[in-house]
Image 1 (cartoon, rainbow, N blue to C red):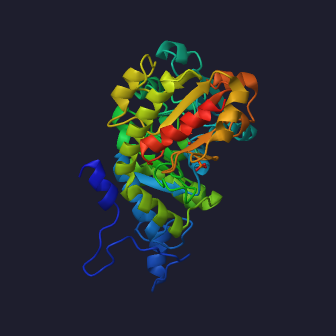
Image 2 (cartoon, rainbow, N blue to C red):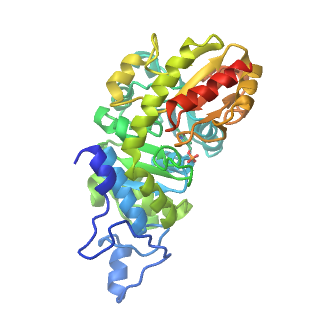
Image 3 (cartoon, rainbow, N blue to C red):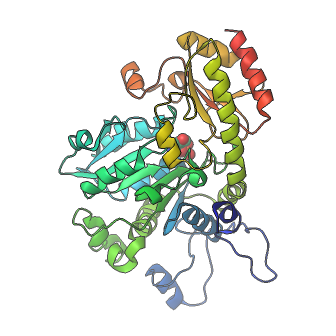
Length: 421
Ligand SMILES: *Cc1c(COP(=O)(O)O)cnc(C)c1O
């Protein structure tokens, strides 16, 4: 099936006479007739559901759909995108380990890496993602266990050279984890370019309607965890009666471990109802992302020509440094998110946002309704000025998430707000 079709049919097939749409299994638990069968479920020798923290039929169907959209062997939905990135990393890194991350990442992920992972003894080195492989190599340590980046960075809209990052990671026998939130699998499937693990905040385009916070981890099944660096996956897990994930689950070792060990222990599980809502969003994802992309392209052109605008970051703008990478990695659009900076800096940014009438100011992005955000005063306010500039964020930077309204209406609103500056 093509991606548009998978958005509708993957993950759930109605039985004869069964419901046409994915049912919501709003149940914490599942009933069995024999202890023998329950034992098999616990031993992971039989597939089935026993407790919704570990697995639920509604959630499972949506996980299968997302795995299929990304081309992976399995997926694990989480209660938020933050939980997805946290579990994705904690699944292979422990205290004493090190990771290399692009410095152009979502503010929440930055805090997770720089503060919370650090407190847990995991060190993250932030690098300029445009460095060459040789330059990146200087940051590798003997305890480096993963490389991390975002396909399209939030909020700076840089495009990551996924193949370069994959080559760099694999040269060092570690996996590449890609946060594919902004691109979605409709525009980019990072596994096709060598990424090993993909994460998403489903809160964004996958949901698309600003209804529910959620996340997902997808496993490509391609990384060789038996290379000697990942003993947690190859040696018996005493907390799960001695199971060795690579031996028993082969290509699905990583994602099974994330579920039965970390989701079991951390409990950052999505509800069946939230999974249902995300599925609803996924059904129209391919259509929405195309409209978002074409609207954003027109909005970016309008902004680029405007006298009050300092610069616009969007791959289709003439001279954009990421135009070639976008052509290579993004298929059929560049998503709806634009970053632009106003000449008047911080004050102009505030005046602009406060003058908008239809476009909403909110801490959100990738919604059907256009919305704006001023990172320096909101999502990235925990970062120092130097950290902000290192991450490519100017004081006047506006993150503009272009919705699916008629583009004429969006431009009209933006135009009158720019006039007020
Ligand atoms: C929003 C976002 C996250 C965090 O996801 P939540 O669902 O808000 O927890 C992670 N990565 C990116 C790229 C995001 O945009």
